[in-house]
Amino acid sequence: MRKFSLLLVVFLMISLFIGPAGFSSRDIILNIRLPRVLMAVLVGASLSISGLSLQTIFKNALLEPYLLGISSGGALFVFLSSLISLYFPFKAPIFSIFGSLFAISLVLGVSRSREYNPYALLLSGIAISLLFSGILAFLIYILPAERIQIFFYLFGSLSKSSWETVIVVSVIFFISFIYFVLRSRELDIILLEKEEAYSLGVIPERINLEVIMFSSLLASICVAFTGIIGFVGLMIPHISRILKGEKHREIVPLSGVLGGMLLLICDDISRGVLDGVEIPVGIITSLLGVPFFLYLLLKRQRI
Image (cartoon, rainbow, N blue to C red):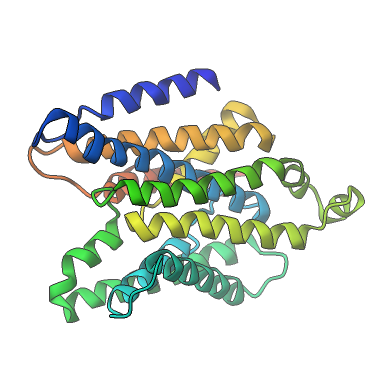
């Protein structure tokens, strides 16, 4: 764990000096690059822990916020909130949270399974995700003036990072992180059969509801400020389990560190691969995540 934390610090330092130059070096580092770097770490960690917890409660290693429609639902609703002239504090995060919870409710309703059949849940999530992403894509054609903003939510970007967004995301992240660490024992027990969980004093239904709420909260707050960034919550939990096993007290912090590292590297790639052009970071994570998802899918079919 210490090695990965040190690597994260190294990547943080390197990332501060990657990107186009502009004003004074001090202004660039403090007001542009540092908030963006911290945002990348927080968002990567949030999506990773969200994906890990969802995989645990549904006992499905192919799940994550993007594939369950949580991210797409949050993105659609936060964009719709921008069309409402009425302003109030935390407008975008509130709409994003509502959209994410609405999406996961639809997924659970469509799958129609109290036992959360893995493949029914996955297919329902993909269908809902495509539906909301399709609506966003349709809005590109009917609202040409809003195309850049819609593109932002469809493909994800850290370009709007600021100290204000870093503070909001960090508060939500640390509250959720503390919850998942405190619930580590219960999350371990959830992996057992339901009868065994009851015998150990754990009520799966209550834990499941809490985890869905906190996982959706983590994913939706990221969507509100960075748009849809997929597959981070799919790849990192698998890597964490390979390195540390199934004990959540160890893999929850590890997933956070690795997720932050991955998104930080992807953001550096998005800014540096083309001279003078920034590629949305969600495109980079998708290029990495889709082959990973197909590999896991084929591996499960062989078992």
